[in-house]
Length: 80
Image 1 (spheres, rainbow, N blue to C red):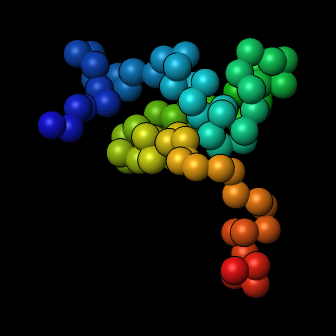
Image 2 (cartoon, rainbow, N blue to C red):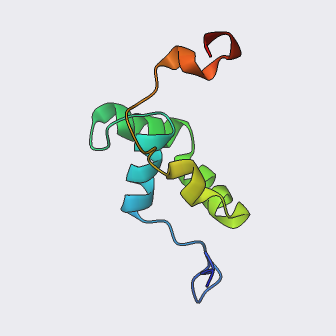
């Protein structure tokens, strides 16, 4: 069953766990650092999380990959 991202008042629920998951997955910044706090403020992370939850792809964006991390060059077609 798919859970609505909205609470009883029609607002999108955004928790500190959501922000931490975003920081670990998208810019790959460790939460709790001064850099993370500045990133959240400068890049409107809460607004981006809200939009991702409304689109329904927040969990896909913040999912941790299984297995060993890929090297940066493996994203390019010439490296395959």
